[in-house]
Picture 1 (cartoon, rainbow, N blue to C red):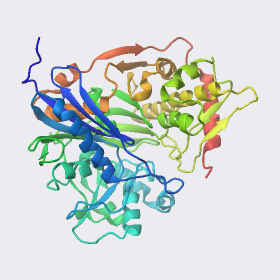
Picture 2 (cartoon, rainbow, N blue to C red):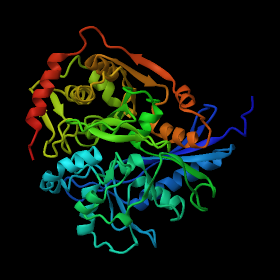
Picture 3 (spheres, rainbow, N blue to C red):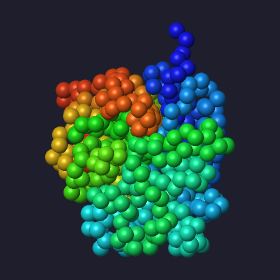
Length: 492
């Protein structure tokens, strides 16, 4: 049967930490068409991580230019998902960035966060976040203090979604959505607006911040010469982890997912009532469908998981390709007593210690590269258990199962280990790029491509279930992990 040329397609732009993927998602479920382009990271000082915002936009433009000519069907909408907390400053008149973007992994404001400790109750109550350099507010404050920025209406601060939309519309739309705004440490997640009190605390001019729009809903139209035809509605926006939660169809209270990417991020849907701050956990906006009642999530943020595998490849050079880590780790029956705590940029949930540092404990003369590789893979599952235990305690909600996505989710033995450690089923969908799917679903929902959440849920398909094995929890190994974490804390 010939393809239906009238079947609508949604373009998802997935702007991650290391690259951009443009993806054509077809409403009838046929295979996607996608294009990917990496962009550089810059490390000017230890603990500093930067991007060139123009290089990100160039990657967006290049991937769109590659994908769009391959589509015969009408483009119904664009959905955008992005690395969160990364901040760009630019000139509204010229569109040129002021210096480099400061990336979510950057730790340069750790001391400033420590100085603001007395403001933690305000930050927690208003934003659901903790005082940590991970979030955007202290990054913006640093840019203001060190960036020689203008003090007039030309100045714009935005997360990567805002920067992309600004360029797609040639400057006619300066917007962000509630999920990205909720990660800046400047947004009141109960009243769903920028907090005047927090903007004053961080000395951020409110007129330099974008307008906050729903995650699903038409907010702008594309301009010409942007890599995509003029007049295409931009109808979906979400930070990458919230997009993954949506893409995994976690629409009921207690449903949860873990994205095994550069870091790992566990999110649990906690419904339409914003919960009180919980120790070790973040409260965040999961999505806003424009109904006047946003959905909230508890989040555990793990900074280093997949990037620890990159470290094995690029730093220690014990593997040549990331896909080699699974077979290498499985070549030994255990880690030989080795524990790796990959706190390369501090520890996130539930510890929130920017001064923690990477630790390898238990090395003997018999330790091989396979033992270290296995310990790194184990650390991914151990950190996830840390978060899930804290999350279940905070929410008083039992995690029924865990939906897994992201690049490392291809490792069967890791997901089996995860199921054993958590004591719940781990579900892997057929589509692992759920961030892009979430962006497409949000945009398609707004434009009637998927008319309801039930239609979105029907588009989610299970590939495999990993069920916990009897006595598979390895409690002794987990306790050994917790001892190693204690030794990594407050090191720097």
